[in-house]
Structures are given as C-alpha cells and as structure tokens.
Length: 106
Image 1 (cartoon, rainbow, N blue to C red):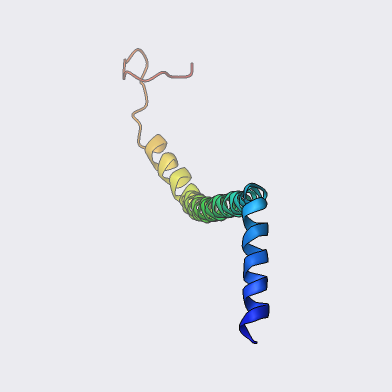
Image 2 (cartoon, rainbow, N blue to C red):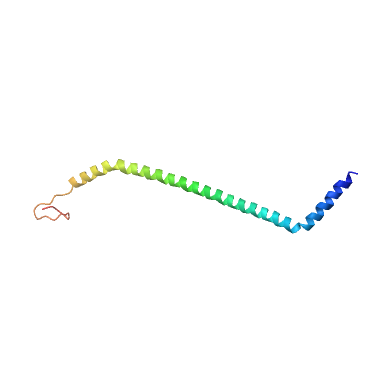
C-alpha cells in the first residue's frame, strides 16, 4: 500500500519532467548563467577593489616619502644659504683691469 502513492507521484513527476524538460532546462540554465555571471562580476569587483586599495596604499607611501624629502630639503635650506655665503665671500675680487673669469659689478 505504501508503494502506490510514491509510485504514482514518481510516474506523474517523470511525465511532467519529460513534457516540460525544455522549459525546466532553460530555467536551470538561465539561473546557472546568472549565478555564474554574478560570481564573475563579484570576483572582478573584488579584484578591482584590491587593486584600488593597493594603489591608494602606494600613493600614501609616495606622499609620505615626498613629505620626508620636503622636510630634508627644508632642513638643508639654512645650511645651503650659509654655504653659498661662504663660497661668495671666498671668491677672488678683481683688481683694476684683472680678469678673474668672474663677472664683476663695475
């Protein structure tokens, strides 16, 4: 007695599946295609996000390096000015009619 309803449902299900096989396959294929496409888009967005984060981190590092270089340049500025002053003071001065190779102010 217990085999009767199960067999009936199996037979009816098989007939319906055979009759609507193309429709069922189209729906399953469509759903699978959409799921695959969604996964591909999700993976692409994740990869893009990772690349963008890496780029932003690199920009931050470069910005930090620029700041450090600017600080070094700023700290060298007084030394550079003092060094130039010493060099200018040690240049030979031209006597009347003497050519030192430097432009002189007359």
